[in-house]
Length: 295
Image (cartoon, rainbow, N blue to C red):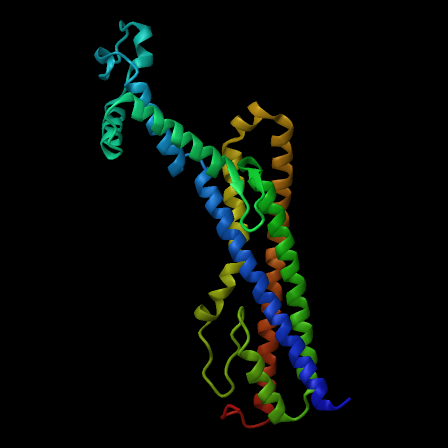
């Protein structure tokens, strides 16, 4: 086989490996954004949750007699039956602002708002739709779905990085001519994403800007950690509905978090090896000949 054909195949292998890694990173970022969006909507105190709480507070407030729609003094001789009708000043102001914001003038409109908010909460928060696939799952299973998904994606990315490093070594070892090696370096460096090789004869790239793309790799850990913490904070509700499902969620989610940490560290280690390989090749080309001019 002609040497040039071999070199071309090695270069193609490196380019394909780089594209594969870039594609996996884009999928990881997309999955992280979707998981984070689901977490924001499902956490206690989220916008949908607060909207429904305020609507129910207003509904409760206007369902009691007019004489009870004022804050009751917290004194010992107050009849205990009135305490369930007491509202704080902040709650009354909150209800008043809510009624004005949504232009509610009667109880029928208020009941409809509560029903609408309940429907949106069930349809878009409690039941999460997976884009492109059309499947749905309960928000309580978010820790399981996101955890296992991140484990699979990070595992694929680790294997892809391993092949990219190996292919890069093969490609540079197959090129013997200094000018051809310089051309290969410049050609392959143009397709890099998570690493930014230094230009031959150019200034050293700033570490801050070269490391920014690598931050994306930490998104699965950050997103799943937030989901896991949120699950721990809502355990009291989970135990009430299903002990078995809650225990399964905790076991799988915590296991996934541990594996995600291990895989993330492994991927960062491989990225460091990839950076080092590019650095070695640059130094080798610089020693082997004049590299003041780009090819």
